[in-house]
Length: 386
Image (cartoon, rainbow, N blue to C red; front, side):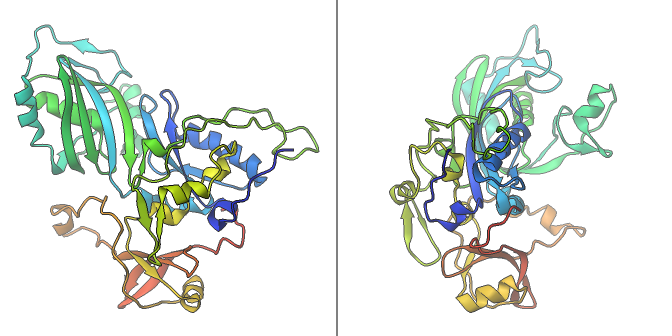
């Protein structure tokens, strides 16, 4: 019988953390999450274990998809906040209904051929907060339904504009008609629309031919698992759920985090070598590659609690204290337009709290000059199938 390796790290033993994957083309993010969920449920012998993605990636795209495992699925809203990075390829002088290769590509008979200087000048208008119209072939909800579902029924719909953040956009390569862009942006940005708008700004049209997500928050593609779990047959009657699982070899892990080191709340450093030493490089089990939640939330301010206050928070009580600033600032700044609107929702002041062992206690929100528990996590000494 296959046995799991125990590293002695609570977040790893109890299936609470994140798994970065290099999603192949042709697979949806949900399909990847389902495949990993089936695998981990058998590895851990926990049929209630949940796995979800922390930001979808179109089936025609490839690259980084960070999966949340166990109680980490409750952290998805906070994992959506950091910026993401993409390499996108576009073909100028051609377009399609979907903005990518999902629909037939139509070429202009006599397109304008912009110079490299014209493209670089046009790119300057796509920085900071901008208005963007998502493509009609998208999962945006319009009138209670997905836009792509209504379009495929032949309905004419008007897509609402949305505010998106472009941190940087650089021209990597230009060999007409192909253009490659390196883009850092916030969640909700459609790279297809960005390419279409750039084409219009250059006096032509554009269609996206390739897209790869290379980073998301503190994860990058170099830290991703390269292979998708196989579809193993169910175990034989009377056997452990781990019986018959195909060992996953050569998972492709080179590093855990983008940063060379990560400061924990107690002031200690966890560098790449130390992190890798807590994992078995040749382990064939996905559960051994979980990244603990605290190592994925460096964009949030952190407040260290003693044992008494940690228990108070887990019991739903308020605490006081000054939080340490975030370890990195890979989060878009507030939008000056939407934040000043009369109907704008106030942005809550939020931090995360950790106990003396460095485990996540709760996401906290400011209330009556104190920190109030908003989303609480049980200590990992008690296994949960959340």
